[in-house]
Image 1 (tube, rainbow, N blue to C red):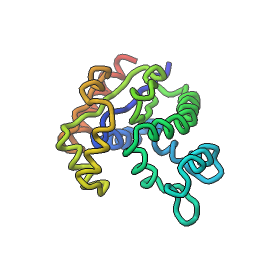
Image 2: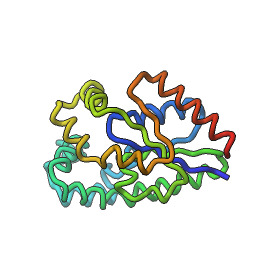
Image 3: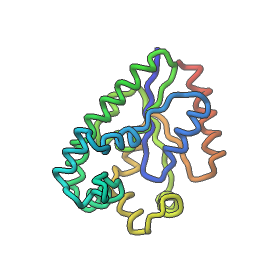
Image 4: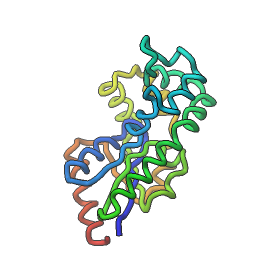
Length: 198
């Protein structure tokens, strides 16, 4: 029977890196953020709702939603962030469930869901992996890899559920303060342990 495993953690901790390592090993991984971006495309019902609500401030000259513009609005206003989540999350949840249905025959299927606990979606999976690192490492990665200023990185880090709270709710924790090789070793050990259990 397939085990559904969510990957979550604070921003900059290395969730996506872990997802890449899993894909390289042949595992199916759903990416909630990437799927959510489909809802921003012109013609989508979510696009229309966001355009009506926010107007031109989130659009480019071709009336396309610019994710960075949308992010700057919602990170500055909690009510607006909740509106965006209410608009997009049902679409993403539907996609998540469809993904797991398609992979019923797999032993393990994974979903990278940054806002897993905030959305209450932990009930959709059998186990939760939390990827964590120190705040210093997270901010450094956000500035170096995503080009955020320190203030932008800090705002995004602070907007998420507390890392200690995530760890307390996790079934397994991957500590990612080292190299990708270190993370890969943790993954190898975890998979070896799980293969014997499932």
